[in-house]
Amino acid sequence: MQLVHGRRRELAVADVMGLLNRFGRHEWLHVIDLDAATGKGVNRALVRELCVRAKREHGMKVRVGGGIRTVRRAAQLAGLGVAQIIIGSAAFKNGKPNLAFLRRMRKRLRRKKILIALDAANGKIVVHGWRTSLRVSPREVMRQFEPYCGGFLCTDVDREGTMRGVNLEWFRELRAATKLPIVAAGGISSHREIRVLEKLGMDAAVGMALYKNRVR
Image 1 (cartoon, rainbow, N blue to C red):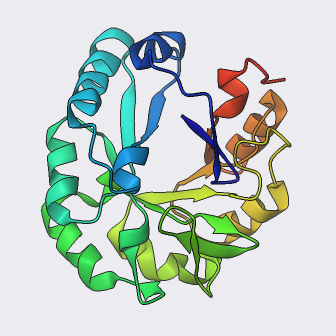
Image 2: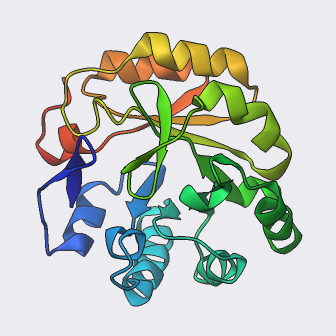
């Protein structure tokens, strides 16, 4: 499943393992459990199988996000073989960084296993399935989060799923705000954009353009 602007759902595909085989040449498999994110359950068995097959058949690493609200849940995913756990809404409480939660997380997991999602719409961080907007921008909170994670997943929600091209100016601003690794997402649709992001020291999370064979 792919979201457009964080709202409209597209590309519901039943053959998840077929997608794994199709994209097996890449280093990372990026998985967001939308059921977990919306409180409709978790896809534990599917995540376990993806981790096993991705590593065994393709040498890929798997990062997983979506509805990870407790330290226990994060630890369970790590036990399934997930290489990076994406923490999104739970990284905030009352609109501010939830550092108490992240301290507990760091006691159970190595720092490099934790990737904090800083998704933004109209320049401000959005949480709870991208439905709630906070008053802060990603670059305003990065330094506070740095001691508790191995990097950031930054999604430009305004362009997510649109294939309209990446907002390089925004990602350059984020690159200047932290030295930690950044995974960039949102609108990426060309090899040139991927190369530019790589020169900035960022990985590219490409979704819709890959699914539709539209990477230029």
